[in-house]
Image (cartoon, rainbow, N blue to C red; front, side, top):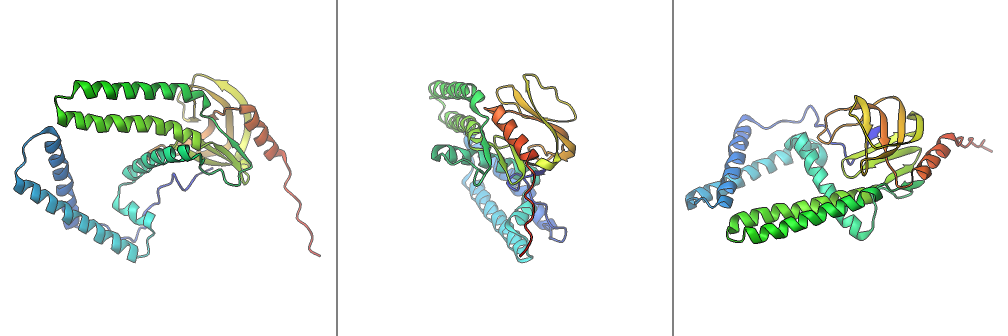
Amino acid sequence: MTTTPEIQTPLPQPGAPARGPVQRKLRAVAVPAQLSLVACLFSGVPVPDAVLLGGKVLLLILLAVEAHVWLRLRRLGLSRRQALARLVPERLARYVAHEARILASLVRWIARRPHGVGEADGVFPYARDQAAMMYGLTFVCVAETVALSFLLARWPVVHAVLLVVDVYTVLFVLGMHAAAVTRPHVLSDGALRVRQAAGVDLRVPLAQIASFRRETRFTHEKKDGELNLPIGSQTSLTLELTEPVDAPKLLGTPRLVRVIRLHADDPKSLYDAVTRARTTPAPAPQDAD
């Protein structure tokens, strides 16, 4: 079983140059300085114009240095993904990619364009049983946003900061549900693509499935070697594999699993489709004339 390319973060090539000592020191100084300036501006602390100007100049220098490193990596033959892996820590890159997939799922949801279902032998949604909970949570977040807008009207800076946070929270909750709707389980090309929202996307070859059964569970204990993907606190299907495989966590931490529990809106259809695909003999090669 493999993680799909969308979830994978490419490893940098060993021969690629790292930042020099001057560049590393510049980054270590510039990033905390920018964060401090942003905190001061949002909290209303007066910042001298000279300090603001210095912060802008430092930011421009940092961006120029990072662009120079990017161009050097590209000239050495690294792809965009590999160059990005050299510039951005892997955990941060994975987190940003996860957030981007969630926001992109909102667009796909509105456009009714599911992800990764082209030329599929079977598509199996799983988000139905969490819809009520997600819509209820969205309503609570919207109500909180409106209430805080009235309560914090006298403090415009705090109001602006929390408004951005609250709006993003609403989009995040809707995006999580949109990701579950637009990223269903897919049976295609002799493999079952098991997914859960924007965080899990595993391609399981049918040949690696030791057993596949319908099994409804509402409680899931965390155990080594098991991956539980509940929807609405339940799973309805259990996959057992012939050997442990790596199903990395959100930030890339390795996780070896041999049992995968998942859910589908129609578990019988998914079970029947996988069973047929596993038992259907491969077509015999035709003799050449």
